[in-house]
Length: 540
Image (cartoon, rainbow, N blue to C red):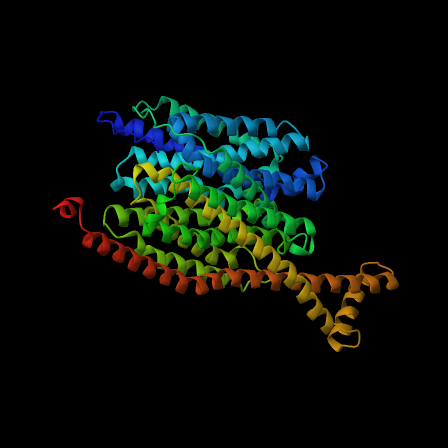
């Protein structure tokens, strides 16, 4: 159970309420920066800590796995501790862990710090969103959740990469962690000076240690499999196979244990009695795959194919943040002021994302910021209309008692969808690069007229610059091989962009069918409950 936070009829409520909301948004911003630090800083960090790729992978695995654990543990923590105190504590833990991470190059210590950051980040996101729902009327939630999304969704998708790219080029990766410390302190300060009485005593309940151990084991194994499977060609590597089996077995045991717990387990599964939550929970998988998948593809394409610097790659996504925020605010206005139902903007968001990914699928090695910007802006607009809608659909009808569990499950679904989406895109790109290179390479034969002309032109150019003729001939062949490899990579990325667009084409009919089915089940349940005799009728 989660404590219900009473409203405060005070003349300073608007000021203190602003402190509360800004503090929660800044807390979410600390997680946004910490969660994306490896996206552009991977190469710099791996060189400074002298780690192999396998060793370095634990920084990412530890953070992601314990972030998911934090999502699922947050409902219990909220039943034991005051929400404001919990968010303040986890934000300070995040700031302290990032501050220490900036001062060390020891891999083992960095892994431990990333685990702390992940658990603190997952907990503060779930607790912060729950507190906003509990502290304010449901009629004000569209605008408030739009503000929260700016820190939890917009920042990691657009703002954080730009900040990190600039810091990597102008300073070093340690400054990314240092930048989190003042944000965490500012967030904690605003939450501490918030004077509204949100210290209601929560209803305590026992902790499900068995459930936590089972789900943590499942999350750890499946996170490793999804993040590292592509590198090891999936089940061709026995380690991946065994971890997948152990993870699935632990997940099944957890689900069975939760059923046997009969309401006293780690999670509150009564949230699935709401048809709106069920629908939004399923959509969160698809939306997570689109958000995290596109956030992975666009900077990767810019860096690996277009040879952008980290700053340029980060700035590529930054303008879309403005439209992302604009779409959130427009959607919030339509829902809060015009009373438009949240479902109304879901098709528009899906359509805009599909069009954006289709436009990006036409990118070439000659593309640049100007040619890609229209598609990137459309992506931001679509994500804004989609994410606020599914958030309000998921939580608007949940009771205060089950709200925290619903938020934890919803965020877990979105994160898992993102993991699955990125893993699928990585595998698709790896296989397509190899396949495209084989196909294109087979067309580049020594006897071909175009090949002979290309090699002769390149050799003449290199010879004119002073290179020996024999060396120039070999260099020309090497350059031609790089061109073929680069074109193979471009085609692979274009295929991946198309895959995200096709994901919605395939998923949309299923989502519509699920929504119709859930609505029919709800009507049938309501009809049967209306026809069932009451206790007074039975006694008479």
